Length: 158
Ligand SMILES: NC(=O)c1ccc[n+]([C@@H]2O[C@H](COP(=O)([O-])OP(=O)(O)OC[C@H]3O[C@@H](n4cnc5c(N)ncnc54)[C@H](OP(=O)(O)O)[C@@H]3O)[C@@H](O)[C@H]2O)c1
Image (cartoon, rainbow, N blue to C red; front, top):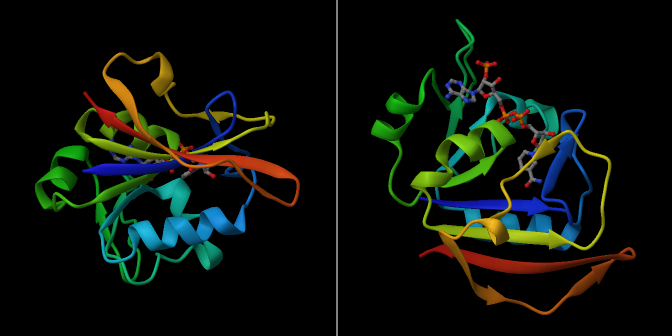
């Protein structure tokens, strides 16, 4: 199981139930890396998608303990154990904070987009640079879009 996340300089990932910033190149990369793989996400992250609908071209495995909660075109799991029993090994965790924190220990590779800016935020990802269990195995060149600099960094569990 792997994960993909976009973080700012403070490892912030969201504010007010939404992303910190939308970078078109990063959204395309997200689509390229996740298409064809099951994606694992929390109910609140699903709500950030257009129309609150699941991502196309990928089985959507959604965590929610809300009774009676159903999503057309997606599977909903009320707890982590039932999710893990159903999730294929090539699943990709796509957030948000609560789901990343719950499943980080199950992930081997983290595809991190590091945004070189600091935003007001209320959701965070654990700092992998401060975690001795993780190491950087790939760093791409810094890119810039609409004045925002960002870099793709791949971490792997040691
Ligand atoms: N920068 C990025 O790459 C990125 C990626 C994704 C999301 N985000 C941001 O992250 C924020 C959302 O994160 P979040 O932590 O607030 O919400 P979340 O993780 O997306 O969803 C939380 C919900 O998931 C369900 N859930 C989580 N763990 C569960 C468990 N163990 N068992 C059953 N249900 C579980 C619960 O739903 P119920 O309440 O229905 O039980 C919970 O309220 C947003 O701001 C979003 O934009 C950023």
